[in-house]
Each structure stands twice: as C-alpha cells, then as structure tokens.
Image (cartoon, rainbow, N blue to C red; front, side, top):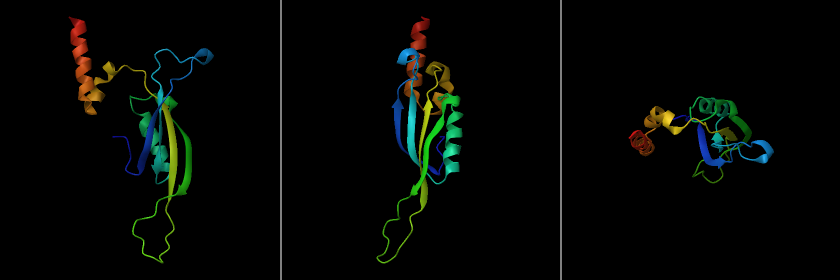
Length: 132
C-alpha cells in the first residue's frame, strides 16, 4: 500500500544484516532489503522512499536511494512502419533499507491491516500456548 502509481518495482532482494564488530553480523539483526525498479521522475522515487521510511516494518533512518538514473523507457507496442517515436525518459532506481527490529508480535495491528492472517494466527496461537 506504499507503492505510488508512478513507481514500479522490478525486484526485491533480501540483504545481509548490518555488520557488527570485526565483520560479524549484529546479533538478532533482521537484515534489510534492496528494491530496484522504475519511476516516472526523480521526485516519484524520493516520494516512494519517504513513504517507506514511514512504515513500521523498516528502520526509517536507514532508507536511502543508492542509484537513480534517467534512461530511455520502453516504446509503445504496434508502432506503424515509418513512424519515429522518441522513447519516454524514466528513472531506474535502487533503494536500500534495513528491516525494523521490532518483533512481529508487536506489529499485530499493522499485520492485520496488511491481511497477513496466517502470521497473526500463529502469533496469537503461540501466545495462548505460552500463557498456559
């Protein structure tokens, strides 16, 4: 629900947790994500990043735009022979952010709003078992 209509996601990759001392992973660090895609403008990429930073699922201070470059976009299909069309300019971007270290059990309300019913059910079931 945070993806703007003028932004498209090409891929989402999980990244390694933030490094701790001596190159080791920080304990219990959830890692992060790398999002690549296309947008109609640099402003659209920036708006998307700001929207992600407001999500409780990400550490707001760690989100950043790694790359954003203006490239030729795709041409529309079925261009008649002899017609020359200049491709539209679009922005290819890469955004990285670290996942929040807030436990899923503390984000139940947000998870319910995102329709992740299976995870919410499992958390509630485990709470019931642990309380007995």
